[in-house]
Image (cartoon, helix red, strand yellow):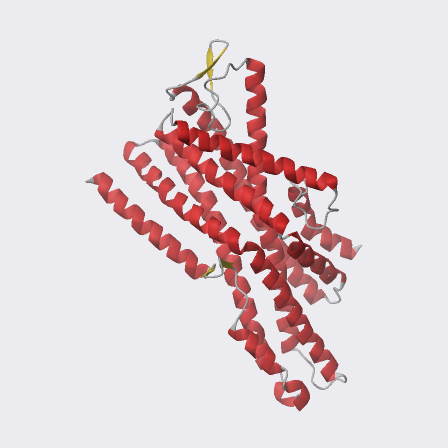
Length: 392
């Protein structure tokens, strides 16, 4: 029962989030799971195509086009993540199966506290990310409907009344005869697609970051085991070798996670950096014109993309730190009292300290707090120049 409670606390929120889109790693990969994944991918593809058409037709205004660009970027990210995580499903299955075994092997209260702490961090990240994105979506829908219906050059007229949509699609649907029932159906479908996009984007982030934090927690437990290693008890070689094998296993799990997210982080960094600059410029223009509605919308979009970059950078930096500190923990144990045959194995652990596993974008940009600060400084410099240009 205790094991079930710990697993339920750590895994249930993620399962609820990812089962509807067919992304839960421990599900039964049958036709129904594949159907859910295909339906989610098709819905996201529709959103991406419609937003691309909105930008192509360019029949409304700059603000609506910027909304379409934002949703296009979010749709591409969400579509990429659910497809990429499906391609690398074996890596996620290995990590989540290993996590289940870790909970099954709990034997001390200290380990339980460490694992519960990292599971709590994963839940907090999931809750904050989803709250931000769902609130953003609600504000987007409420704020976009009047823009698409009143501020546009081309309007959809339904029974003598102008109407907007949940996502920018006025230009795409301008040449169709839309009845009230059809309009309501389209609006509901677009709202569902918007929720699927939010869940696919931030739900996939939560799925990945949670298991990464779990690996970090296991590394912390391993560090504690090295520091408190008893060199006077029998079977020293067997017990120390078990710790080395555990270290090797965690390195393999971390490497699988880094392999999954490498290409996703390239696209994430590119799109986030681009939109931070564009939406930041929109925020500056809104401040100059005292457009408080646009200021609030821009601020919420900025907060969503900055939140994504922040959590990836913090977790990536934390993983790198935990990897590096394993070798330091070995040095802190009474290694000088170990038998020579056992002490020689310490060299291999020290060697891994020189090449810790990191979350990298495209295997060349390390995603950590240093990269995060560089992106913020570059974006702030760019926006400062634009602000001066507007004021002059």
